[in-house]
Length: 324
Image (cartoon, rainbow, N blue to C red; front, side):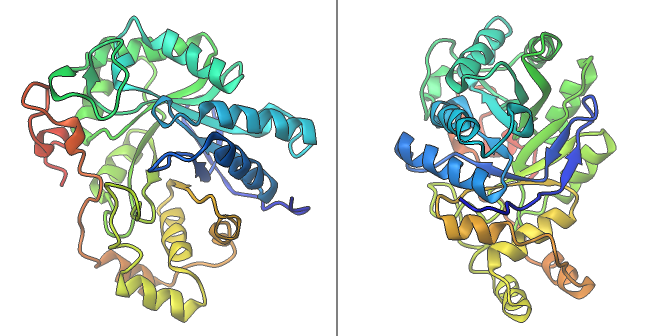
């Protein structure tokens, strides 16, 4: 383990001034990794200075993450649970008002934690209760009652089981629906953001409503079933990286950091984990930012798996409300 872990800057969430490390370590993997591999990667990440960890019921990494946290405490890599920022997510089949609390309690049991820092609705669509699967069968999709599900999320926060609540993969329009009835507004919207899908409109909308955007697929999720190599193979990004003596991932992550958003990175390779931390002691020039701003835009995570003729969203246009 490294003796001098990196100190990662923090962003402040609207919920009680909660501090969140700007760079988080993602634990989703396609195909899924062995639990021991995930646990070892988290321990290495903690040793390097990562303090923000992102999981979900869907990822099947809650248990190894919990084991890694317990081991890190035992080894003295961290002094207390409070040094960490832990996020998990509500799956579609639990996105029913009467199931939200029990789903969070199950997540906490998996993690062996008393509370989360952030709990997110994973997708803006529900599926039949009790049928836990991915991909979801097309006939099992059901509309989500945003009002009652969000009220149940608020109750989880009031009970102290999570310090903040938010959403993931919500368009401006769907966020507006949640905001229209919310007593506690969402603190976060976790969505795809990278130099080839910059989400300027959504980020502006979120900032205007006190919602922090967190980026997933920050490097294009290359190698996953939904990912793209357009980020890693971008000539613009490669030229900037070469000129600055950086890697393409470092350029992407620095760009995201300069947007004022949180960003998740996922690598189970220790050397790349370390490289991904090397983004805080330099900045892009105005010219470099402008070049990145001119990159042709296209979404990688289209979300076809969440559309169905039987469900609330028949097409990806409906899922994203035209934000394509």
